[in-house]
Length: 144
Image (cartoon, rainbow, N blue to C red; front, top):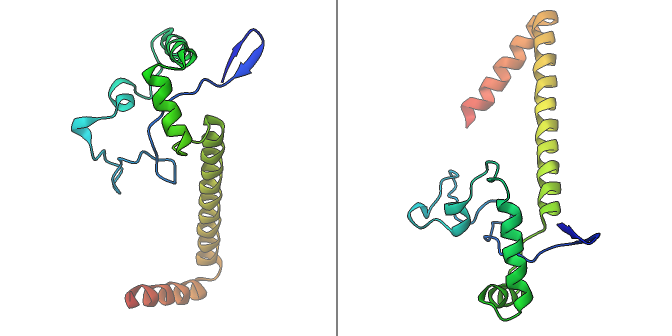
């Protein structure tokens, strides 16, 4: 999102395709790049660190200039992909999904910590029940 003359708008940009979970389509199951020798433009020329001063603004200006031409290769490629539904979710949507995933992960971690705390209390206050529970869990594990 950018603002010019008090108007907020989005500059249509090309972004790499992703998997349904939002990760790069070229990541393996082990989160390794499967095309390292032929990294996409974004991977080859950008990283997650802060950009050099003015790079983002200069890049957006260049994209906007190409977009205004309506006949530039950039515009034609973007239009071709867009009309075929090859679009990416907005940065706002990606951030919302990431926030929800992090919150869900934190909630799961909180549940694990509560369970561990309860087991520690049981071990101190009800050692016989704790031993029976531990043996039962081990028997389940042995079945696998």
